[in-house]
Length: 146
Picture 1 (tube, rainbow, N blue to C red):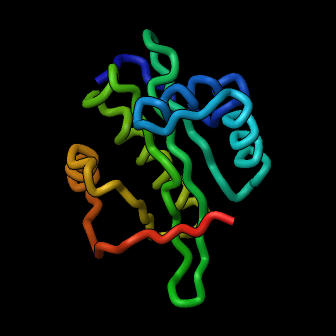
Picture 2 (cartoon, rainbow, N blue to C red; picture 1 turned 30 degrees about the horizontal axis):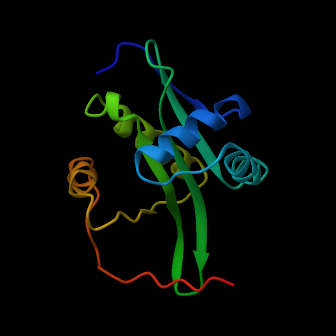
């Protein structure tokens, strides 16, 4: 566990570090595109972007979450992304970020959190199981670029 971990709302100054962490998972993004995406999320009061900073490595991770409403299901929180710096994994940072999202969900009256994880990320799957999440179904994701 990291001695001094702070979970806080992301700020514009964090956008480059957030982009760098995206790259650690294979989602390379240039600075301008990251800043544009970051600003879109920050301007939507329904979404949250939390960061974990520590006393030695700067930005240790981030979590993005947003409410989703469908006709066929009660509203839930979708985890848009969770990344912990590879040099800081297995230190409680991911769990602290997820706890922060869970606390926010409770505050706004939503009692279910959903997330998706690439089938190849077995370590992430074990992490989510360890903090109380369960696999409820497997599905395909379809995309059509316009």
